[in-house]
Structure formats: C-alpha cells, structure tokens
Amino acid sequence: MSDAPTCTVVIPTYNRSALLRHTLDSLTRQRMPADQFEVIVVDDGSSDDTADVATSFQNRLDLRYHYQPDEGFRAAAARNIGIADARSPICVFTDGGVMLHADNLNQHVASHEATPGPAAVLAYVYGFSGDDSNFDLVAERLDVDDIDGSIERMQAKRECRDIRELFYDRYGEDLTRVPAPWQIFWTANVSADTAQLRAVGGFDEEFRSWGGEDLDLGYRLHRAGARFVFNRQAKAVHVPHEKPFEELMDGVTLNYHYMAEKYGTPVMRILAELPPKRFIDFNELVATVL
Image (tube, rainbow, N blue to C red):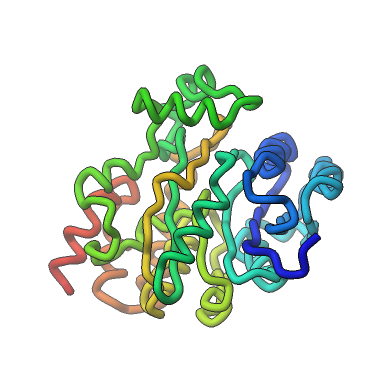
C-alpha cells in the first residue's frame, strides 16, 4: 500500500454490520486504485459482528479498524478518531449503508485539486429523502451488485433524488453565492481538507444525539475560510433501511439550540427556531441578518 494515500474515507458505525458491508464493498469497486486511498472504520461500541466484517476487507482495502466502548451516541468522537488517524490531505466522510459510485473518490479529489485553498465538498446521495418516503422505490430500483448502473438509472429518470435538490433548485449549485452552504454539509457523502479539519477542532464531541454535529463542523469550516463546492458527480446511494426520523427530530432540535447557545450569533438563533424540515428556507432568512 502507498505511504501517501490521496484521500482517507472515514466511516463511523454502530451495530449495522450488513450496511457497513455494503459500503465497504462499494469501496472495493472504486476506479481510484486501492493503494491510493485508505479507509478508517470507527466502531461506536457495536455488539454484533461489525469487527469481523470490517477486518474481512483488509485484504482488499487499506483499512484500519478502531473500536470505542459503547457510552451512548458518540459519532462525533468516532469521526474524530478517523481525522486524527488520517494519513492523507483529504478526509471523505460517509456512513454505513451509503454505497459509493465507482468514480466517487476520484470526483472528491478532483474538486479539491480544482479549488484554491481548503475546500469542503458536498456530494450527492440518491435515495436520501430525510424520511422514509423513498424507501420502497429505492429498494425496487437498487441493485447492490450494480451500484453504478442503479445510480445512473435513477439519475436518468430523475428518481430517488437527494432531498437537497429542493435547495439546488431554489439557490443554484454555486455554493459561493449562498450565505450558509454549511447548512447542507451532511456527512453521508462529503469531504474536507484534513489539516483544516484538525485546525478547527474536528467534530464537537458534546453532540450526544443524532443530527447537527455535521452542520456545526461545516459552520466552523466556513468561518475558517473553506470554499464550499458542490460536485454532483461524486455520487452515492443510500441503501434503504429504517430510521426513526420523527423521533430523531427532537434530538436535532435540542442540538440546534445547543449550537445557538454555543455561538450566540443571529444566524444560529435562526437555525434554532426553524423546524429542521424547513431547511430550504434557512438561507433566505440568513440573508436578512448578514
């Protein structure tokens, strides 16, 4: 394996070994040669066969597995382990249950190379609707043995689109023209400069419930001068799996209030008062206080 990988893929996981297997399998199919990227799986205290699944890929991927004890939801801490262990200049964040198109890593790296200064790259996740509304259609359209073909068919038919299409339809895809692009910096499929991630302190480990820790990091990257870039061709698909979105929204709201208290800025106060599902309206409201 190379001593200087081009990028590092960081994957936090907890008791979802089957979904992790899908993600790792998609990484074995990348067009980027396997000796040019590394994979760091950080287990947030799983009790299933996650360790066995992760280590079973070590003969095909430059993969390191870390385990942290189960002390509740600690995805932020898990991702920080990956950032600290990264040997490359770019960290790509994804989740178990997200399968990456074969050109995904090449596209992330290309966006960084084409951007002056540190970049934060937002990519595309088919089937990610923010709730279970696409569950059946994605399950019908997705062939896990043909990820590229599945994604390309969804793209051609404009099906199973990323919920952030609502954002791009309204504001366009040039994120330099948007006052708060960090508001859609969602770690299912994003990347950032490793040195800058470390400089801003990584993920805030005070987040102990789902939702918001990625926006919080994106906010600090933006304030530190990262140029936010959208790359539609860095594609992936969200494998259908049940997630209690309505229950999780209560935690998201609490996290947004934490961010408002933490920063004390008008922008964050708007975020705290806006229902999460109205993310599409956020940048218009931000523009009124900037």
